[in-house]
Amino acid sequence: MMNEITCVVGIDVAAPDVLWVGMTAPKQEKWIFENRARLNVKFAAAIGAVFDFYTGQVKRSHPVFQRFGLEWLPRLIQQPRRLWRRMFVSAPIFVWHVLRQWWNCRIHKR
Image (tube, rainbow, N blue to C red):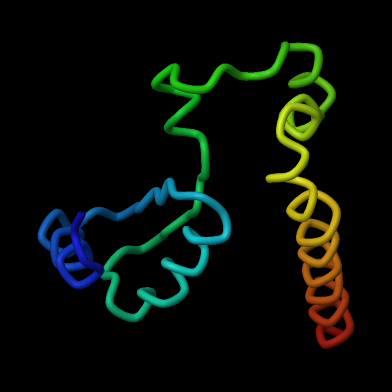
């Protein structure tokens, strides 16, 4: 496995405008955060299991779940030990930070 320096150098050589990082959460977010100053990309995003879905390694939820924004629910039911903290602890904290930032930006524009 490549070390982080080799990985960042390889990304710089490729010179992409967009970098999709598909690791497990929160490893991918931490990796982007820790390497953001060394990454010469315009946009980097953590996309988690998207590569697994597109390669067919992981089957997506039924279209009904997708349509109603509940694609996460069957995964939570199948893997509750692995996903409960992400769904019920991390996600609400993230939403709180987004709303707080939005509110602060709204207040300071006045």
